[in-house]
Amino acid sequence: MIVKHTITSLIALLLLTVITGVLYPLLVTGIAQVAFPAKANGSLLTVRGKTVGSVLIGQPFSDPKYFWSRLSATAPYPFNAGSSTGSNLGPTNPALLDEVQGRLTDLRKADSLNALPVPVDLVTSSSSGLDPDISPSAAAYQVGRVARARGIGEDAVRALVDANTRERTFGLLGEPRVNVLALNLALDESAAWKGGK
Image 1 (cartoon, rainbow, N blue to C red):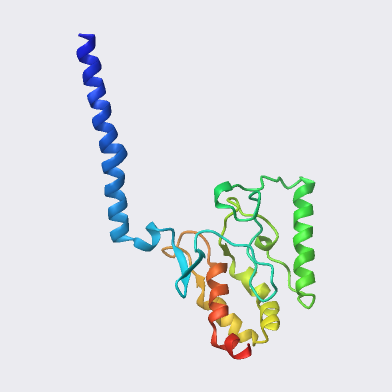
Image 2 (tube, rainbow, N blue to C red):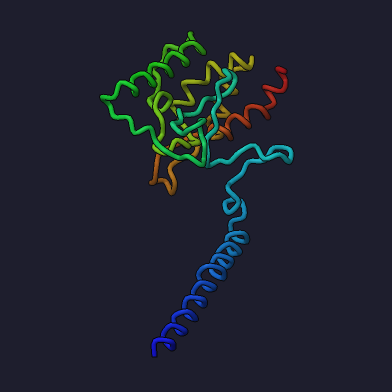
């Protein structure tokens, strides 16, 4: 009797392993590849045949001619997708104040002419450490610096920000946001910038 139950259990284990561990993942992957190929492959951005990143994972930018992303607390380098984590620094933690002060110094050094209040998302880390987006106010804060660094008009840069601003999902979920990588790629491809090169 024990041998019969053991054999039955092993057959059930093997059958369920094949169904749930092989067939089901292949079916779901196949459906995803047909129905949502870009999303199924990581929402990658490609420029002239070269993959430059994903719209889902932020990248660090520090050159004044680019819009800067939020801070990233991942280790050993920023926006490390294999190490997604928030800073977990509380409001009374001195390390948070040091991080904010350091970023404020960097922002002021890169654009000493800007007297606007600095949006909070430019001086704090996101909860995942991988946030690819900034708020429209964070993008607006950086327009002057980017325009001056590229030698183009602020209106042209502002138009690109507006074109790359996504509204709330379904008009209800989340907040308006600007994907930093997509915006920076649009800047590099813009006719105004190419004319100034």
